[in-house]
Amino acid sequence: MLNIIKFATKLALKNPKVREGIKKVAIKSYNKAKPIIKKNIEVIKKTSNQTSPVKNFKSFKKKYRENFKNYD
Figure 1: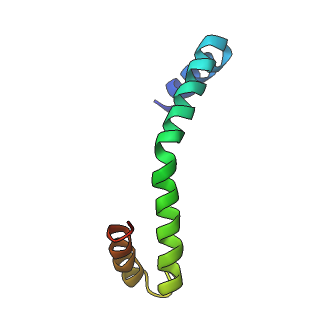
Figure 2 (figure 1 turned 90 degrees about the vertical axis):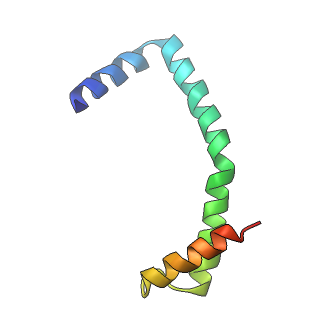
Figure 3 (figure 1 turned 90 degrees about the horizontal axis):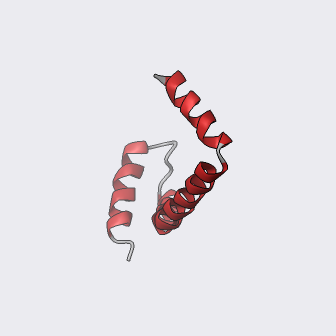
């Protein structure tokens, strides 16, 4: 299965029109996901200042969920 995906990817990247279409889709997807990624990073930074993810991951996870809900 993986070989089929690799083969299809190689074929797609050789074709300039397909490559341009892939580029447009990738840029559009990134622009859509950018605010969500930014929000996650800010919440993670805030949560890591409150509790350490290394020492107590369960507490970090719980605090992260609370901070994520109360972000705005």
